[in-house]
Amino acid sequence: MTIHTFHHGNDRNLFQFMNCVNQWITITFKNGQKFQVYPTSIGFTLVSGYVPNTVYNSLTCQGNEINSIAQAQGCLNQWVQVTLKNNITLSFYLTSYDEQYVGGNLQTNELLKYSDLIADVTC
Image (cartoon, rainbow, N blue to C red):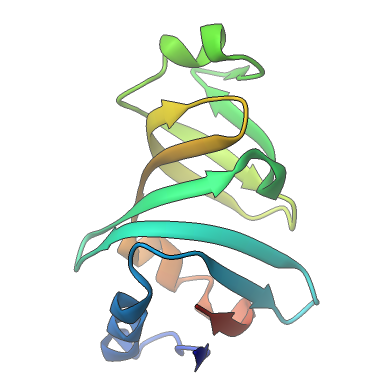
């Protein structure tokens, strides 16, 4: 299933993504970069799920970069900063961290401000 870009200001289209809950989604940005995301919940205020560690450049907690499970333990259940490979920085509520995946929540309104950069979403 391919779902095309939802446009900023058209919140109704965000909920097309509900069809993609609990499955891997590929988000393709207009610059050609692709990211995989596994959403477990999509709501009016939060999107919850997992991303592979390969989609971000850095994960920062209280000013310190997280590079290990031990460092992540002190930051669980807190808001951290995640900088994606395309240099978009988002506030992310960290709920899990391991060698392969990071889990947590993003505020829906924060995602919407970057919607104009998305070319396609496939689930």
